Each structure stands twice: as structure tokens, then as C-alpha cells.
Image (cartoon, rainbow, N blue to C red; front, top):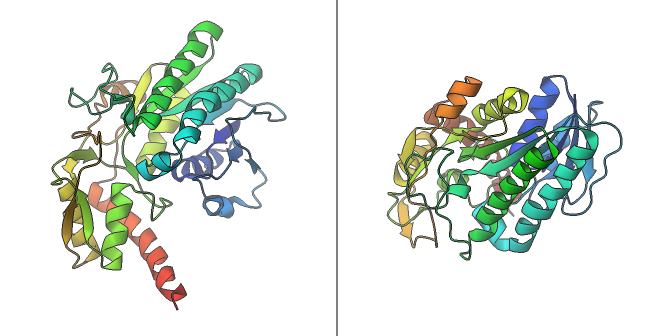
Length: 317
């Protein structure tokens, strides 16, 4: 298949490109590199089945030649990014999704939307099944991301129902692993980098809020199965094992051997208190569930960031 991946320079997009190429597909990566990094794709230079197009999908998209699939991963995804770029976040969720769907319709391509667990907001149902409609504040600071993804889901389903487009929607829960940015504001990368630098680990609130952490390899496997043999219904992909943020901080300290302290800071506005996927649908329809334990995934991620922190120290005068 010849497949377009939007947001190819991002954390998840770049891993997805690797996996698609390993499966024998030809991949066109598209990114304007607002939050993605060209360095995430340098290892693919010279691969005859891969090319990069620098383009903002919020503008009209034209890709020469046939396309069999489009995986729409373009969007700022961390709180720091979408709070710094609120309007581009809304535009890529609305205009970018519309343009990508229009291209899929024109090419007769299968379309997969990268949605998010943030469509559930600060949930009143726990764990969160796909049937839950969510508890989202549309005018809060996080609304630019939450509502962009909710609109993107509605647009995707409209193309599916009205145009008969072959579509998928993956609701991605907290994911971590190599190629995360050191300063992306996500809790796993924050804790690891702070621990390796010997800085205090910053916990917001008292750290009792929960998250479920899925290693990137597991997530990409779930997305591949969904793309290949899933249905149009939204599908949760994430790790159902729940941890408090404070428990995560303590595991990072143990695994890094850091002597850093844990410090508390005020809780951000609309920060979800619980987050845990119900993956019953993925288990039944895709035969998928995560395999990598939190400790094993953290070890792999720590080694990645250890090299980055080491390089930072070398560059310091």
C-alpha cells in the first residue's frame, strides 16, 4: 500500500512511519514541524519507499499519485504545545481533518483519525468505555485540544456515513517512549528528564490523580491492527493498568537511581483526576492488549533520555 501519514515528524507519527515501512508499505510523511522534529525521521533518509513533504495540513492538501491509506496524526498533542498554539490546534483538528478526509475521498483511501482520551474530558465514568460521551469544558484552556479532537471525530463519522468512506478512529491514551521531546510537558518525559538532571520532580496537586501509561510499541501495534481490520466505531487503545502520578514519580526515581525530591505544584485548570481505558472493544475486535510492563517501558525510555541529557552536559560551556 501507499500511505500518507500526517504529523510524520511527531513522536507517534515517526514510530508509525517505521512500522508501516517495516510492513512493506510505501510511506509519504507530511509535517509542517510546528511541534514535530525532522530529527525523528533522519534515520529514514535514503529509504526509497519513504519521502517527506513539508506542508501544513490546515491548508489544501495535494499528493501526487495513488494513496491507499491516510493516517491523520497531525496536531499539537501535549498541554504545553496546545496551550502555546491554541489556534493552530483548532485549525488542524477542523481544517486539517477536513482536508485529509477530502483527500481520502478523492483517492479512495482508507482513513484513520488519531483521536485522544481527552475527548472524555475529566470523566465521570471510570474506566472510560467508547460509549461514554465525556465531560469536557469547551471554554477552558484545554478545550482547544479536546474540542478539536471531538470535532474531528464528528467530521470523520460524517464522511463515513454520507460518503461511505472507509474510516477508523483511535482514541489514544497516555503513551510514552523514545522520541518524546524533553520539554514537551508530558508527565513521563518531565519526570525522567528531571530525575536525570538531579532536579526536583514536579507533581501537580498531591499526585493522587491517575493515569494509564502505554509504551509506544504496544500502541503502534494496536493502531496497525485497527487500520488493517478495525471498524468505523471509535476504539480505545491504551494500557488499562492504572497508576497515580506520585507512583509514577517514585518508579522513575528508583529506575534512574536519582536522589531528586518530589515537589508539589498547583493543579492545572481542568486537569483530569482519573484516566483509564476500557479496552474490551480492542480485545474483542482486534485481539490486542499491551505487552510491555511499566518498568520495562520506563527503562527503555530512560536510556533514550539519558543520552540526551548526557549530550546537554557535553555542550554546556
